[in-house]
Image: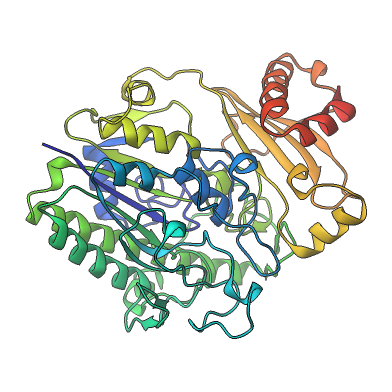
Length: 463
């Protein structure tokens, strides 16, 4: 019997913020799902930003290769190339009916082309019409970029906006259940992209907010200070009381996601599809929530990069916790393996009870106009700025070039035993530390192939 696929991912949901990792957060459905299935404990976003993650998920490539190194945003023509061979294209060729519901964020904003789009798209938003840009998603109920969680709009096959009268995650869950019931006799692959807990944090139904109204919140050791900024300059939050308020809202949204995920699982069970569906629950990237004095994402810290990743395949995967490093670029081949389309390699790694010393690479570039314009003045490519990271079983090495040409660059090494990353070893030369040197050489080899511009700068700066 053929397997189906259900891929559910939330936006800006970090691994720390789930019940089985944090008793402050109420996620009974997710906790139960994790207990019964395979949890990949060390899963990291290839790039902690919405569009690059999505493009890497579908292509299996690093952002420098598929070209979506920044968000698909106003004033930029960055978008997923219609000629890329995506996961959904392969599944279509294998006879799958593909569905995509929720936040898309892989298309260029329509306002880049016209001031009066027929679809009524504003800001970074876009209606992606049926055709090659949809990469064989025959059911597409989505939007490009809009954060109106309590009054979200969607498009399907024409430019007429469809407005929801319920919380966006609930609306998307309802449509996911309809899709499952409609396609239960067919082989399907369904992607559900929840925007919450992405800001604005206050757009959460009251019934979830009430659960955290009187709850005492425990904060991590790296949440200090009274001024919480966004590393790339967007507005942050002042005062610990404000941070406490948004933390409760963030947790409330995750509890809401938990309830919606539980409904989808019940739908699979009710339709006798649960044991014949590969199910993945994860996120595109994390959120700082005050750690290291930051809010938002875009940094190399665990709160930004580390995401939940729980996977069920009752036919192949055992029930345990895998500690081997996993990256976004691994997900496309992993899914093809589990659906018996590709020879099993990554499956064997995560299904093993032993932790392999498997190195992964993460990165972030520049995507705001203020940074891009300054780099153009200095004849520097945007794709050669930002930071690069290599993570091994025991350490993570970060090389930061900066977001502006005038930023001070640095290199530092973190021990993975340092849970809150409070004790980095700053290095002027990788040769000053044996562990750093080994990782630096592998990072150099990776960048020489994938990102030669950053590699050349790194070579001239650190040797």
